[in-house]
Amino acid sequence: MKNKVLISIIILVILGIGIGIGYYVARSNLLNKPSTSEYQDRSGLSPEANQIPLQEYTLEKEDFSINVPAGWKEVPPSSGISAMVVNIGEQPTEEAAKRINFKSYFAVSYDTLAGKTREKYLEDYKQKLRGVLPEIVFVDENPGSIDGKDAYFIEANLTQQGVDYKVFLVLVRGKGDDVWTISFNTLESDWLKYKDLFYQTAESFKTR
Image 1 (cartoon, helix red, strand yellow):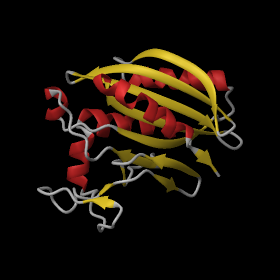
Image 2 (cartoon, rainbow, N blue to C red):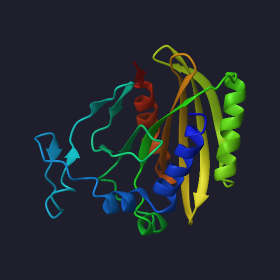
Image 3 (cartoon, rainbow, N blue to C red):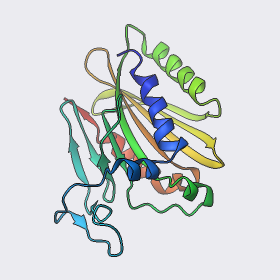
């Protein structure tokens, strides 16, 4: 488990930034669940793309739960990621973001302290991020709590392929040595629009 965070970060970089979440969704046929009354019918789009949740709901997993905002949808995660949720209906206006069909998303991944102190774990975590993303700039960090458990909030800026991103990372202590990371990614220009939503979503996270 000790390499899970690094693996998850690399996957998120490849899927979420390098080729765009939208491209990943399209290539993987991720939107193929049957329609229900919870989904909006958007004329002119394929039946798969019509399936956008109209209301916020709670995503229930074996080890955790987290709220999914209205208009966002869970998609099958890749190896090393426990859950991935994408703002399916988002249409970026920036040309560079359009080219890679980027859509805002968040993902949940699991790791362990592996005997490290919280401070050492955070130091190594940021160092791994810098190793994978040399362009990343940490702009704000704050300790806090979520559901009565220790948490740590990190805001960072990142530019790739001519696109300016805002990365919001929330690390939550679970049982024993468990550490959960909720990784949010959006365009820097959309950060103020999503900031409160991201914090509210992170604060809904509960471990079992």
